[in-house]
Image (cartoon, helix red, strand yellow):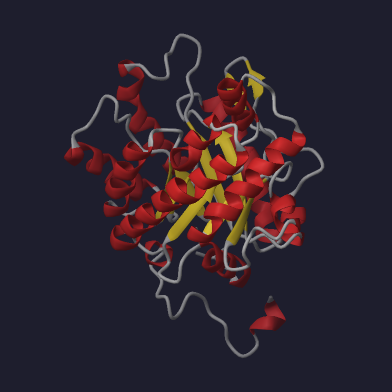
Length: 331
């Protein structure tokens, strides 16, 4: 790929294991995390309480990951400043604002004010991540979303930093997200979304599992959907967890990596039960004793079955890009 340059390669190396497999944990939740804490503890957490959760989570389970995804508001700088993010763990940082802008046709992603790809690069992070609500069947809205993805992609090219895009399917008026009818349409939407978004210069697709396992448990059928997703994606791809229970996510990682995924970037499926624990010491113990072991188990699956990111691009680990005698003159 023409846009796979030295800086992007180095970033991809730093957020993956030496094998080329991504073992990544998402901790960039903001409004969603606040809602989880409110629901469990019947109280709205303040800024410091949210930061403490991020610090505890990163300190306890970050060591098991090749990369952690943090947000600029509560997590990224705070974990660096508190020295809980090991230098051997890659850092991915969100560029989008939490939530979305309402549009008559659906949802639009907006970038966080006073934040940018330049700042993410400058703070020492290894990759930029952007969540986009995406419906390929709503063409006018999809075109707007592709435009903002392209803008961030251009900035990532300028600052030579990897760009991960996380498209999320959502329901529109008249639809029920968890219904059997919506589940039937999900594979087609996820696969087409991958095709459209990876036509842009993005480096890794953080993909939804292309089926709802509440309705479809046929492993051969699920594997076929994942193979179609792999064929549609022009870039390496990883599976996101979307808040399913841990056992379901473990099955999804197994199926997806066997079909070509280069690992996973999971969040709530790994640690969500800890948000129901109000005592900080007990919550930390849960992160260490449960979430950490989950990450280790998922890592073993991904390492065994996953395809290294460079293989997806048709590259050899020993020759990722030309770096001849005068490479620095053109860089």
